Image (cartoon, rainbow, N blue to C red; front, top):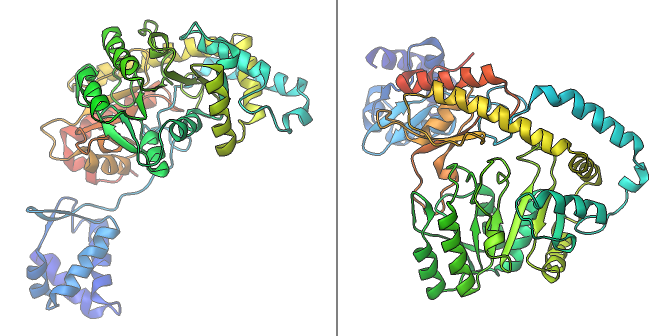
Length: 463
């Protein structure tokens, strides 16, 4: 660092910028030239101030500015380290190795069929009908198609208990707003879809994480909460949970449903991945039908852009109640996407796509199993994301790794995004789906393994 300090003294004397702005520029220049390397430790504030003949406050402001630019990583008790400038990458759709957005794989063999089918459907449709307001919760034909889709998982349902929604997220907004008032509680697992956290925050609803074991939320923890303060609802993602990939066993589902029934607590069953496994246990909607609001859709079993979800309510009366909430928050789903969804369900295309996605997911999971053979991780053969604990040999936390991996062209999501109890697991969620092909998937996972084996690679930006 002595050579760098002399270089900085000369540069600061020549610079017309204030020193607190010039120092971050020098750090960036030295990173580019190789004079500084990521993970190099910088002097403490007082030491650098003395070396550069500057006051402590100026150097503190310089380090703060460098941190704001993403150049430094300060760790309490350890010091200040050069991190390198993190280059942001476009989200899925703009990068072939984006693995942070949980999208289904795109089977290439079906592209021509979908293109031709969509063109035919739109050609035969009445354009003005599609440009008009639709019935709230879906037209009769669209509800019938939704019932047909939902019956794959919940056989006992009728058209008057089905609502067509513009995506699962909008259905969750409507449900939380109706089942829990401001200040009330919704209980859930210690890991959950980040959207439910955002919805609860927006609506002023408290989230209470339930203690869990390796099989999911503990029924006795659920019961203890019901005794202490009856929650407005119990939210769960029971099949291929996002992010852990956990599927609740039949026994655990029955025990949780039993608690809900005894204390009359509504269940929000968020099951976007429920149709992916061939042998998924019975849904909670079949175990506690009088209390369960079952949500599924097409974004995870067809494509993320097909923003159509189906909400199965306990009764026709509840259907009307939730329809009012949907009307207030989202008005209606797009008639264009609903038209495609209804046709593709009715003519069998949706099931064919689902089968193809399962096959493609299995192929990519096989690649992950082979490439990550030295690392323990959680997955399901029919799912398209994995849950990867950060190895103990890596001195980076998941929250530190995620932006560094993005710098290398790999999008990943750290466990903190899913934590509901303030104690996030040190793990990453990686999606194997999306627009990348199998070889891109293999390349990204291979690069990930190499980086974990040699953390210094994390600081070398991908060109």
